[in-house]
Image (cartoon, rainbow, N blue to C red; front, side, top):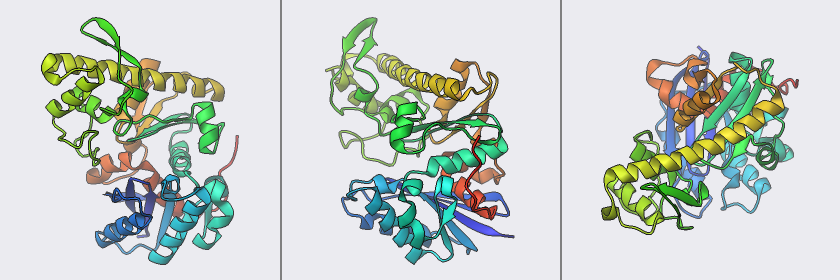
Length: 349
């Protein structure tokens, strides 16, 4: 049975997915050390490899880590990460999106195709399994909203800059995004007030209070370097209003969290409407949710009056791997795509 490992090299995490005969067998996520040193990628990869029991026929890699500020630009980042995996992994190919798969040695000639193309891998696989819809992959920091039509990726943009213009990339996530990036004011105890323009709290605090954040989705230090209990999150959220947690009840802070959550959903709904209209996606085509924040994708589907499909439902995965497969969609997708032996660019509409 053919075995392939897919890798998604991010600036905060390295994710790997083991695919055997087209079925996802296991998925792992390894945090990168929070240091200003490019060697952090090597250390995370070494730890990930140490935990592997599989001996795959090949490895397939996609990345967003080239955006890390340990690199001067994307050219340097793609070059470093490609060379790193070329030295560490046998039989490895790099996902270059619309250009297919390339060797690590050839990566420097495809920087524009490789840089942050992990969304394209997920969308290409989703389009094969769900011919029309909107892939919504919401992670710790960003949200990708990719239209699918006629079994192919129907995005208007490709680069991060282009996708930010089209609404297909929204820099908002369920963990690292500062609350101040979601709103400048909020309703508290029936009264509207401005909030502090400081990173006192993040959306992880919001979703810990609403009870929606998966327990292991936030491996990062909190804004105040303190704990991650609901009480700790309430204290951080209170600071956004110039208050202490003791100034109100936990129910009040949960209500505030729900207000901020609603604001974030509105941002995503606005972007989704823009993308769906531009791509002319059918009114009853589903939202396909992926990422650790796909509970928001489900809410988006409900608000748009569309059916919802989970990424774990459009792939073949062992029961124990389904949850992490949905969270780590690009790693899963790049392994499955590599297994198809196709190095041709995806067809355009």
